[in-house]
Image 1 (cartoon, rainbow, N blue to C red):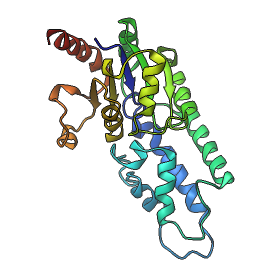
Image 2 (image 1 turned 180 degrees about the vertical axis):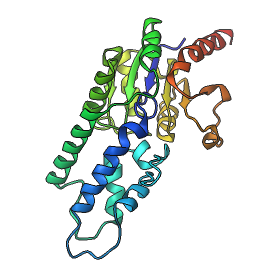
Image 3 (image 1 turned 60 degrees about the vertical axis):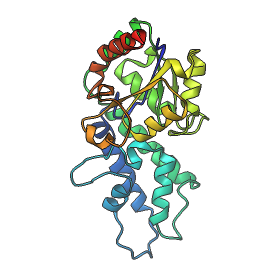
Image 4 (image 1 turned 90 degrees about the horizontal axis):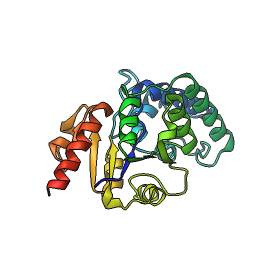
Length: 251
């Protein structure tokens, strides 16, 4: 029997583009403003966003790109590679990091958009006895703020972020920590996510299974996921879990 369901946050519980596109644009604009005055390269906001999987013109965020699947450390590292050599070190400059945190706080307070009705299925799963946890490459505080805004924070036994001391996905250590807190073995746990980082973490931790939230199954054609492991939104998850348990019991 499955005892623990570990959820990614963005793209699963939150609408990725509606919630995070303004943040991506704001941080890119601020980063460009810190370019050295004597740099004559034509790299701009559009280029920085494209490098992390965000299309500035269409507003589309690639669910497998760095912005969606990685951490802010991954974003800083990506940008540093294409910035001028005399640019500040994004991972070391305190003013840059504090200003970016300020932008995150500002935009997070403006909008936290759920990916459809997430409260109903989460409460149903909780009531049915599943232990719920969050594993995100966002920071833990940011994730808790998002979940609190949706009124579901109290449903989760733990919220693990990329800054919680267990690395970031696809490393397995955050998933294993969720299992430790819940007192549930990885083989009795499933991961619900939307990126290859989520899938990688679940696989590395030897989770029982992975459930993918996506509108585009074709992008996952190279994986060994069964067709029934795909859902579009969380309101499909309780029924899927019920069928999953029946299937396991039959085995």
